[in-house]
Length: 288
Ligand code: ADP
Image 1 (cartoon, rainbow, N blue to C red):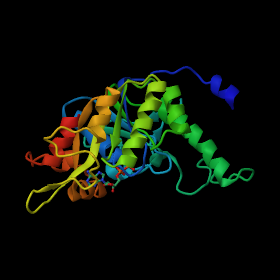
Image 2 (spheres, helix red, strand yellow):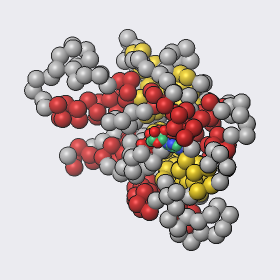
Image 3 (cartoon, rainbow, N blue to C red):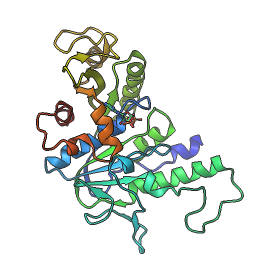
Image 4 (cartoon, rainbow, N blue to C red):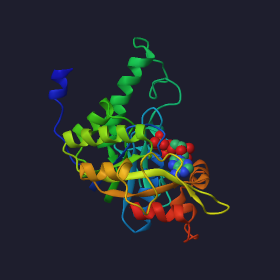
């Protein structure tokens, strides 16, 4: 495997795409996909031609978040995956591609309908994953895009390395929660990007505080060292950003509406477009 890794193709640009921004988190469940999709929609809302590529193999969430399903159209001639403005893979002005559109529901070969006999489900899955990942990275016909947001799988494992080795990522955004444990992992994520020569654009602190819908009081539920917004902080996310020399991009509140918006497939940036005072929407826009 060492040999084959060394023999990997050089990093290349994703075709038709000017800038690639990877959104990552070292832990699952911190709101990486929620931030990624709202970030992408914030760009799209500003008139920037934007796409989002969901590379989370074992938990693709972009189809749900964008209320999209179905298979991408495959170009008969060159096998290029098409995402056009009129295809069902665009919603809210944002083009999207996901493992969720590509992997069959059951573990059968999508072409023959047969379950491969000579492989265990796990090794078959690994094979499919590599193939599909390669296709996702290099065979999607995005049309001209200014920005492609990559929703990376959580963690700093093999898949992340493969993606980093295969495509030129112009910058990465690390999503964390204020908890010590999530932050420690986020720092590990920072190390990975540094080793891969990917500039880290900054960190986003999701679920930073809970804003009571009744009285507006802000409670820092997960706070450990990350004190009140307005005061100097010597521990936590902001301090870590300072230490690493990385920008702190902003706070996203823990808000039941963010979760409800996600569940009904209309992310907050779109759902609350007319409610211009919505703090949660403003939070996502300001990160963008
Ligand atoms: P990840 O991609 O890191 O696994 P998700 O974006 O899927 O995390 O978020 C995990 C869950 O937390 C989802 O149900 C999502 O709706 C919810 N969630 C994410 N961010 C927030 C937030 N700021 N407020 C409330 N719920 C959130």
